[in-house]
Image 1 (tube, rainbow over the protein chains, first blue to last red):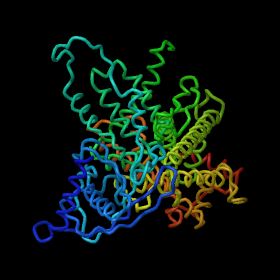
Image 2: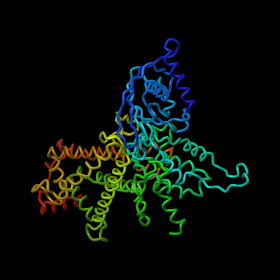
Image 3: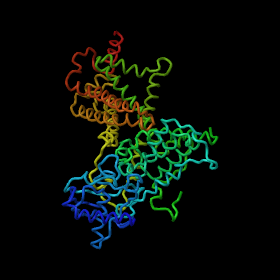
Image 4: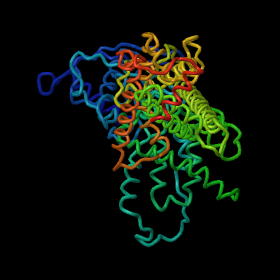
Length: 278
Length: 279
């Protein structure tokens, strides 16, 4: 945290003095959602943000606004962030009605202010879903995703001596597709963008990641049933709009959803046989 | 699993887990399974729509051939089964598919509505305050829950109009579909209803046909483009075929000016039967 704050204050100072040196600056107006707690009523606050360097990321813009708020003795805006490299899945934000902003395949931390124009009014809201309760301001609780992972997003192996290299051959195509699915960072943009608040894209990516490769086979059907049914305790029903894929910073394919649908009905049949009810 | 004190608020389930029913009913208990059933019933209903449209093209062969087509449907099964039995079995099957399709659509829509409710924010039914900038969701996919009910209500009107004859009153002749169709579609309000409902049906099919592949898990990156093409083609064929009836009747290209048989349900039908046999 202290590291992030240091970066912020430096950025704040440069933005105020850099006008003559290099880079364009923008004057923006932000409408930001503020809410004191999970049950408190929330509303939009309007902030003027002059002198914003176009080289800043969207999170750095929020840092600047927070710096100014703190200097004025106000409570800073809470928002989620961690690696700021686009790989952790911690940042969120609905920016002008688009999850992670309007840039394709980009997380909020990798969205740069040069993608906006001088004088823009930007509306910032938290990700919305019944299963994503607002903690404070722009921070939402996404632990329902953890419940889905807990239900089966793992493989069980015997530990002991290290196995031989290439002991388990993995077909190249399976490895590639599994890797595409594993790119999911679990940010929740799919749920946020979905008009139905469905978590199909997240769950299907986590399932495909393990169900496609040999290591995932022993628990494949058990995993599919458990993860889907946990997902259905929290989220809406997919209507195949395709908004999730467009919002996804990692461009997870809609094909994984079809793969999950196929595996789920198969799992219902197979698990019955496996438990001797055939 | 009930949330414990150490678990965050986001871990509290939004939906209660129901006691599982025996296989295969438990498939319908899950949202994915329900969507799967919705896809299968959609395939059945789509099959009916296509066959119904193609069958109705007999209208363009004149009153006697249309009569013959209607009679053939009642005689399905030939001498093996009692007359109209197979037709009734198909009707009951169709009704069952319709009811299941509707039930699954309604319950899944409710699930999505509950899952989208915003905590701590009351400001209408929308999920976000800012204008939604849809990228992938098209007009058809966003209006399924409107085009569906429009088609449903239209089906009721269509039955009242041409099957039960409530609309035409004394002008309705039971067993003479050519006359009934021409008589009914000559009225401008009725023709408008048919046009609007069939446009809604085509829009519904445009998303439904593509969506059923996803719901059933029938996909292959190499052939995925074909799914959209198939949906467009089926929606187009159904639209053109079904719209041709009200449009051509209104244009005066399908009428009863050259009709040889009288219009009544006794000698008229006998005459139609004899003309059809003479072909």
